[in-house]
Length: 60
Image (tube, rainbow, N blue to C red):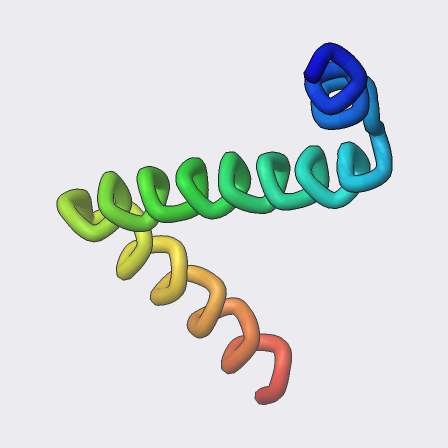
């Protein structure tokens, strides 16, 4: 029974995949938090409006 415990605990075959998934989940959580925060402020519409005005001004 001890060999089974050691075999399950000491294997590192899927560790890279698990770490990759955890990083992706953390990045998604941060992105969702930023999107939710930005949706409650006028920051994004103001930023897009400024960028659009600059682009239109450069195109003229």
